[in-house]
Image (tube, rainbow, N blue to C red; front, side, top):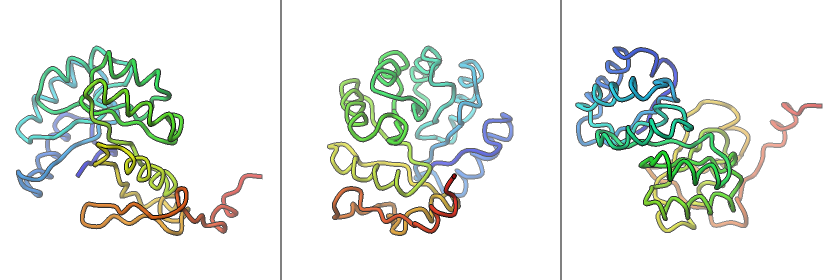
Length: 210
């Protein structure tokens, strides 16, 4: 499970209290990661939080600092306390090439609707493989993004992990009539032509800009 947003990242004591409470609830054998959304901002503060949260054995900490803080990312990765993850806001293979080679994250997280589409994502995946970095796609918006991500990962040798939003947003739940379900920790790849999504035309008409 991964969680973040809200007040997480605003206050060190609150951050530790939240992570401690979740860890105690799920147990030591449960894989846990957090998303800071760059709120720790500097390497110095992020490094102190990596050390402070080390007793809770987080698998990865996502976006501890801004993606263009390559030096900060690299030093955090070298601490070997929790894995570093990031890159959801980056676009094209060129930004990801620099991020992979200079920031040296443990996990890279392109968003298929931001990075340049399926073809560009495949090139980013190849770059990640060449740099020994795991690719775990960002996926927090609509059922269209979800469907595209599932099809992409199904075509990748090491496509075994993705983000499945728990948002209550109507754009996530309603824009696509046949949202791919999440069951017992897995999603099933639809056997269909293309992405296989069926759009809710009434919702589209309701929010159409004229």
